Image (tube, rainbow, N blue to C red; front, side, top):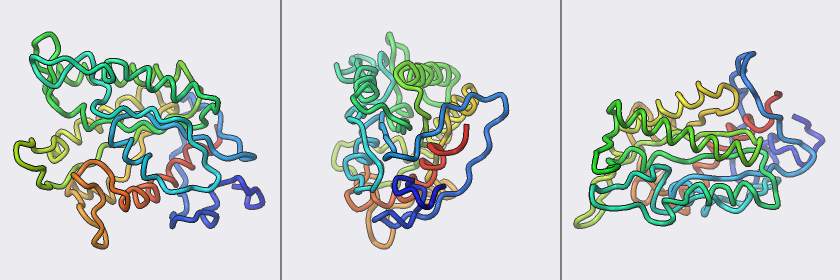
Length: 266
């Protein structure tokens, strides 16, 4: 860190939001490919891709000095499971079928990102169907399919930018009343959440140093027990999507990891 550089956001004292100081990340293996570190003579350029959980995190993101965002690449209503659908007799929406285009637009904008934050999992742990056959999380078939979709997600990012990739772990959800006729959220099933996070780690293992798994689960899912409120403030209004008050807290946990990822030496 350069304490004299006004654009170096690793100096936590410069933040308007309370952010704990970054901690050193694990040193990538010698054989790993590590994209170039972000320059420190200008604001950090952040791109976000993923689903509506990522959208809520991005929408309620507090102002962070010396961080600039690209257009969002988050898609409301789905993750990266298309062409699979959430019902045996349904088809993915057009937005879900074209999720790669949403991501590409965010990555191809006028500001080339330095780091990409990928937020997925809430849809990938739901039951899906493809060609009339079920894709049930935690089965070998689902593992193969989700690994393939995550690989495609990686390829979309890497084909549009050399930016470093942070894959945010899925967090377990508290059981909040969803309303009459609404299904229990899949994220309340800790075994499914753990299974998806294993898929993220497998992606990182296939691309060591190029994909880094980030996590805030020590704060929102310690020991597999979901945290609903912090100091009386509900973090996620339905247990999954971030509230206006909860998102800044989430960013205070994410930012040190994100900065460490962006600026660690190649």
